[in-house]
Image (cartoon, rainbow, N blue to C red; front, top):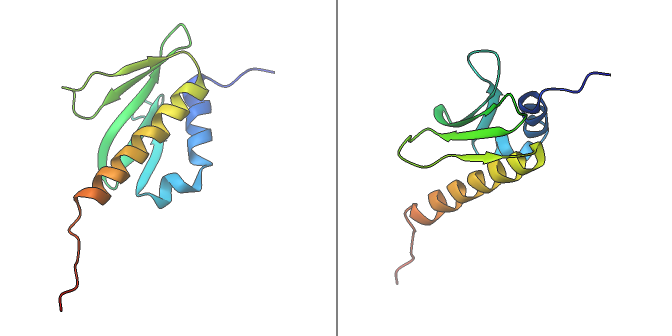
Length: 102
């Protein structure tokens, strides 16, 4: 049985996690038919691509930030979920707070 490419496996695993969508993110196949594109709402957040050595490389939408290379799908999954969590926390912390007076 042929193993799935690491990017295809990552896409499948991310798509199976309901909290990804519930947090306002979406994942889909890259535009070239490979890789994994991560969207925050309708905006490009970043993407994964597989190397010929089976590693996965993350590229942020903001190319001024350094990407990341991981060896396994599990590492890519964990890193993606941490990025989503950090983004949700940042959005939550920067949203206006309502206070009651009197």
